[in-house]
Image (tube, rainbow, N blue to C red; front, side):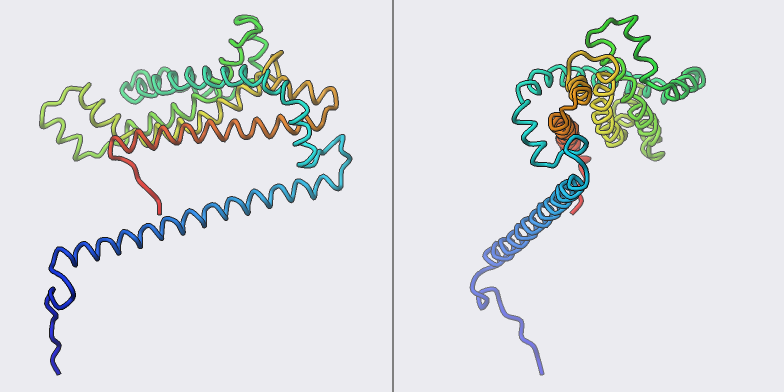
Length: 287
């Protein structure tokens, strides 16, 4: 028994037509897979969110409204107090943005210095590590003395909280260089600055952006904690006020807003990371 191989003409077209047909089929299959994955992701997230809201609602059934507000009561608190929330929100956003910027500059700058200089590592790193053991809340009164009651102490605390993970990620990333690539740069006579910019920094980008994502969330946490201690404006201060005046609905509404704010900051940082790594051809996608 022999098997005959059909010519392209017998299959209904020439080679180009067959290639176009198979390519279109492949693209359609990929599109269907992407749509299926997105549906699965959306359903999974919706189920988790629904489970959380149900657990919150169920827990609220066993406690008086003065202690635990239900999701519906939190929504009522948001609608009733939205003018207060919008009045305090810009202050918190400014503190988060400034704290994140200052912490990022400190983290990346000191990380690059320590990664490049053995002297800087021996002299500076022990003190930086020890500084992280000091409770940041305990520093608030000292910072108020030096910086006043404005946004200065909140920005300083947010920067101090968020810079350390970025520092460590920067040091690790700048030192994680492929030895063969480093030898190639040396053989080509590259200067130290060229090695730093075109090899070390390029290789460190994924870790640096990972540190930036962590720092963005920690800057949000730092600004809120600072407002707890030394705030007369901002969502953290509003949270303390609502707690002290037993406005439980408003308190839960503010907590939800702060959670959404932290998540938004993380998503924005992740989007910037995606675009930056995409432009440097270092983006890795997980299917």
